[in-house]
Length: 70
Image 1: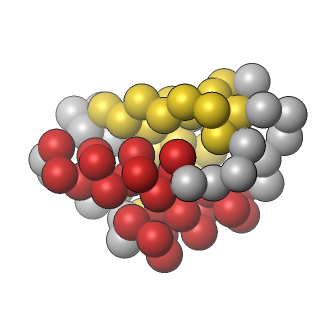
Image 2: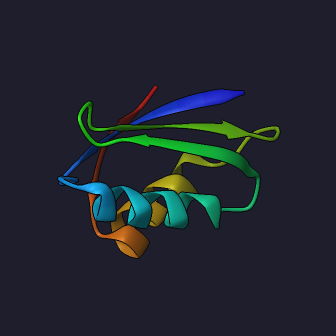
Image 3: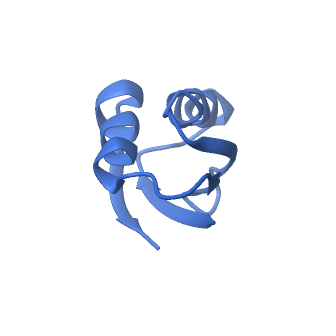
């Protein structure tokens, strides 16, 4: 299952690496692709990963704003 996360506050490759690392550490996340230009991350997850865990990773671990999850 894939999810698209809309993220505000990223401006460079360093930002993308922070987000990618934080999301990759969430249990159940298999792959992470971050696109700074389009302000999003596309993740592939095993089964169902709670949106709250993804929000925590983006906002608390990486320091950016999670606008929505599609």
